[in-house]
Image 1 (tube, rainbow, N blue to C red):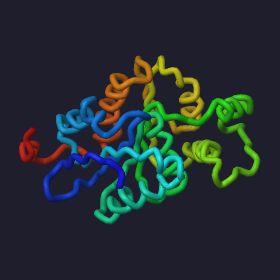
Image 2: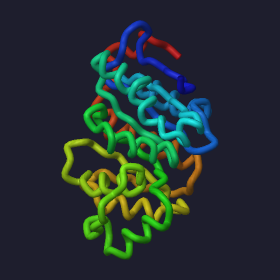
Image 3: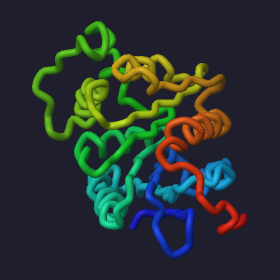
Length: 228
C-alpha cells in the first residue's frame, strides 16, 4: 500500500470533493502537512477531503505505480461518489499526468504545481518543432511515458477536464512549464514569484483553493462542526 495521510472535512462521511496530491521527489505526505496545505483548506472551511500519498520508488521503477494509484485511491473515491481531483508537485505532477493520460475517466480535474515534464531531449524536440501544437511525433511506444504525456498535453485545451497549472516565475524548469501552458485553455495557468520550493508551492496552493476549488466545493454550511 502507498504511504498516505488523509484529512477529512467531516468525521464519518465523505465530502463531495476529494483531492489526492502526490509529492515532489524526496518528499512525503508529511511535507504537505508541514507546509500548511491542510491548514489552508480547513481555514477556508471547504467541503473537501484531502489525501496525500507517496508512491514507493520500486513502484515507479517497475511501472506498477499507475495501477496501484488507481486501485488503492482513485477507484475507492469513485465508489464513494466523490468528485476526484488528482494533483502533484514536480515528480508527483508527472505521475498525475501519466495517470490522467491512462485513466482519464477516473479523474475530474488536475492540479499541477511545477510538474516534471520529461527529459530535455523530449522538451527540446517539442520546442524545435515550434511548440506543442506543431509537434508531430512518430508512433509512440507503449513504454514511452514522456511522449505519451506530451501527446496528452496536446489535447488538454479541447478537453472538458479542468486543469490548474501553477508555477514559480523563477523556477528552474519554468521554460518547460510555459511550453505546457501554451496548450491549455485560458485561465488554467497561475504564476507567482518564487522558485522550485515549498514556500512557492504553498502560495500556489492558496491561489488554487481561492480560485478553482472554492467554486467547486464551497464552504461548509456549519463551519463550527469540526473545530481545529
